[in-house]
Length: 259
Image 1: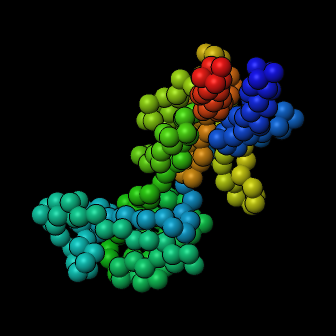
Image 2: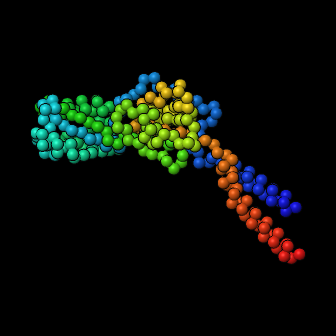
Image 3: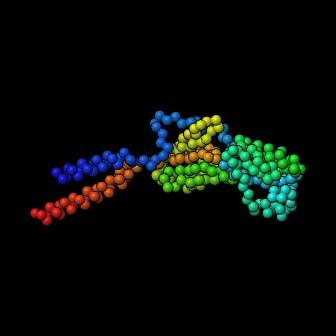
């Protein structure tokens, strides 16, 4: 009787455990989920948005002389070397304004980096002869989940042509406990409230062209983990089995002692 009771308890616990198996898996999609088509034309021009940290260098005479933006004067070689060693960042506020030297509050949200450079060069032309400006967004990042729950990382995009394969390489590749045929890229798209979701299969050589997909700032890359049902059930019921076994040993010992 005791034996059947124990078997019943273990079966019941296993049933309850199965309800929580893979509960850590994020961003699940139903079988009938329709993924968006990967754009044929890769957008490599970043659009400036609130929260961006901007860094720029300003030159006069078409790039001949470095301008010391702290004093508004031109400089020679020494000034250029000094400015290259000083990183000054300008934050784009939530209202879209950024406070820049001399110009003050300026709005460049919605412009690409190239468009913003041209716009600021035009604005600075009122103060300098033939200004030349180099503008960079310093905090362009993507969020990567390579397949194991404790290894998610923010990756800084060093250029405008960083590919999916390069980003995965920066996090050490996908984990051993994940699916190379189920890589999801979630991307913000202008004029859309929800992100577009693309699915990429890199498990075969045929998927190599998708590995060259250009990754944009604010993309989320999620590699689907494998479903380790048996292992997770065993992990869940192991403490129960241990407790039942200890109880059974205690019961049998007590029974033999009484007899």
